[in-house]
Amino acid sequence: MKSPLNLGFLASGNGTSARAIIAAARSGQLAAEPKLMVSNRRDAPALDFARENGVPALHIATLPDAAAADHRLAEALSRHGVDFVVLSGYLRLLGSKVLSRFQGRILNIHPGLLPEFGGHGMYGMRVHEAVIASGVRESGATIHLVDGEYDHGAVVAQRVVPVLPDDSAATLQLRIAAQEPAFFVETLIRIANGELHLPLGGHVIS
Image 1 (cartoon, rainbow, N blue to C red):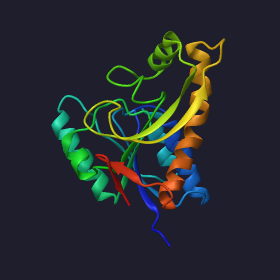
Image 2 (cartoon, rainbow, N blue to C red):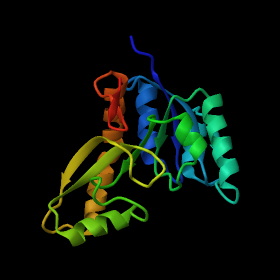
Image 3 (cartoon, rainbow, N blue to C red):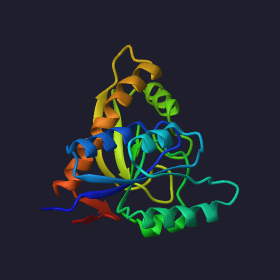
Image 4 (cartoon, rainbow, N blue to C red):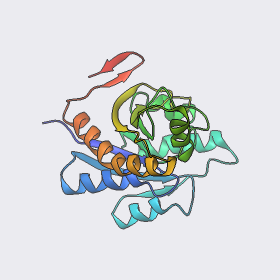
């Protein structure tokens, strides 16, 4: 029997996907143990949700000293026994200490199909506006490994969502956002069950 995934979560706001993942772990749907929720915002609703559900919660400001925050975050994740880090609407680049300590074990969900429609400044509604402006007929969500560049790490899984003829950026955003939490849970279940192996630098982590 495989060991459960020991998960740490980073969120800047509501942490919608993190909430779904924690609920799936608590219900036994996902073989995982939520170990820690961290936000760069003291007032992030994700922190309140974590505390209400028995998950340790920590505020670590990324400004003004990003290097000190990186060190503190890496130490906190390790101290709480985190093996995999899940980004759930975390709007900050990770520092070198966190990236090296958890290399190949940091996952993010992006509201578009990568490598197109990603990169610096491409988040939230900006992604959907770019998709609509391009005229493509498919969008979706991408779960990828995190490295030192925005939306650059290897793709782990994608969920395709059609772009309808009458779609606006707002309607497309709603349809994709509605699928993201369950998609993240499903992907983590596949990882926990050994059905999906994480790619790292063109190789596979088994």
